[in-house]
Amino acid sequence: MTAIAFIGLGNMGGPMAANLVKAGHKVSGFDLAPASLEAAAKAGVGIGASAAEIAAAADVIVTMLPAGKHVIAVLTDILPRVKKGALVIDSSTIDFDNARKAHAMAAERGCLFVDAPVSGGTGGAGAGTLTFMCGGDAEAFAAAGPYLENMGKRVVHCGGAGAGQAAKICNNMILGATMIATAEAFALGEKLGLTAQSLFDVVSTSSGQSWSTTSYCPVAGPVPAAPSNHGYKPGFASALMLKDLRLSQEAAAGAGAATPMGALATQIYAMHNAAGGAGADFSGIIRMLRGKGE
Image 1 (cartoon, rainbow, N blue to C red):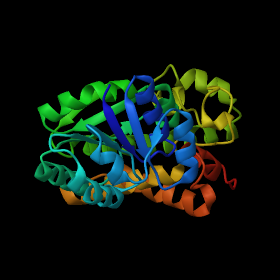
Image 2 (image 1 turned 180 degrees about the vertical axis):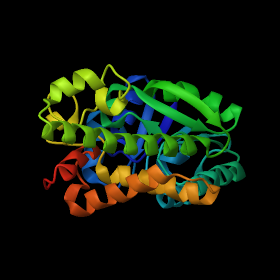
Image 3 (image 1 turned 30 degrees about the vertical axis):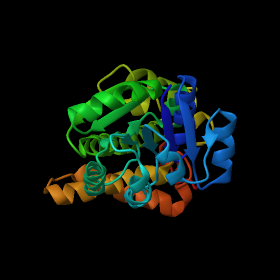
Image 4 (image 1 turned 45 degrees about the vertical axis):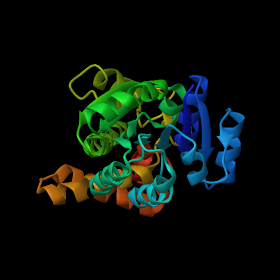
């Protein structure tokens, strides 16, 4: 039984911590939101008084936080008390520069560190079927593997420090752009007299096929588990998609990479969020494309 500190028990972190409990680990958690602490406690997570307190007693620390500034702030707080040689896994989605800074901070303390952002949404977090995209050296990745496998279905070593964040940013840039294209096609199909099911039956087995169609279809009917059948309850909120798209554009600017589709997708999701769609699932972009409000 490994002593694990889990910092950040929200919609993703809470279920991930619960899966570590199910795997037989002793998990202590901390979050600033009382509701998140209450839910985690019901799942068997021990609740600590502070992030630093639970981290000091842990062999493994997992963080799942909103942005890079939060990750750096938490590491600044906890690292002076963390055991040398402890393993730190950050599963937040953050910018590349802060990811590399986090690696350097952990190394200075003598800790192993892996940046391991996830794909799979809240459903994957609950079911333990997440994909982890990992950055770090071979020793840190090997140490993190068993714990990540308790929370996910696929664990990929993408390279050195920050490589996990790089892969996540690239993946979600594809996802944002393909969801817009998918939503546009279904909205056009409606105006041309096609039913959602008939278009789905064609696209899902033809060259236009993508995850956005087959697993997350933005129109109600064809994929019963998709947010489109549940009032666009996230899922993966549009605000988070915009955050990731903006990270992709920051990274592209820093690397001197041309990403015109990524840039356009960022602008479209910014419009969607400004129009009231930020809290809905990102597949709800189809409502804006149809000319309907949130």
